[in-house]
Image (tube, rainbow, N blue to C red; front, side):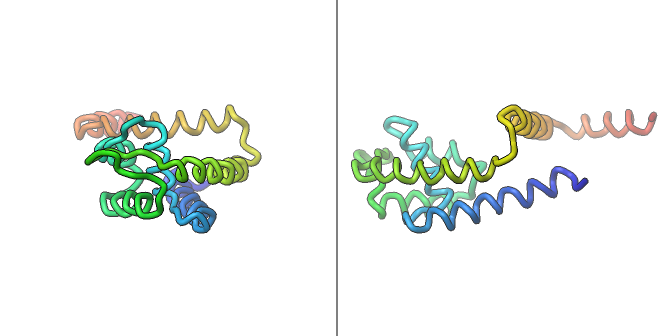
Length: 149
């Protein structure tokens, strides 16, 4: 069995490639779709809201390009400086895209039960927490413990 890192390195690009291809007809990318969801889910969303919510998903240049694309494409507007809102057209089109994304999600989780999916997410969340909160001292203790084996 290949290690989890191998599958993580293959899964994320596969998701991105498939979503980018699927969303191309709408003038969107996966990251632009994520930007629209933050704007949709956060009334009076700010630049900081969008960048904070998606900082783990893309670098600042990719996020900035996605924000510019949703503004230029008429999906969202700036009702005030540093604020976002979906346009009426953007809201309508977002519903259309959501149907396509639901089909993608069904395809990507085919053969995976809701419990298996939930377990996978929880395991990845726990691994991330372990590594993001670890210190060099933790590694030294783990190495010492392992060598006692």
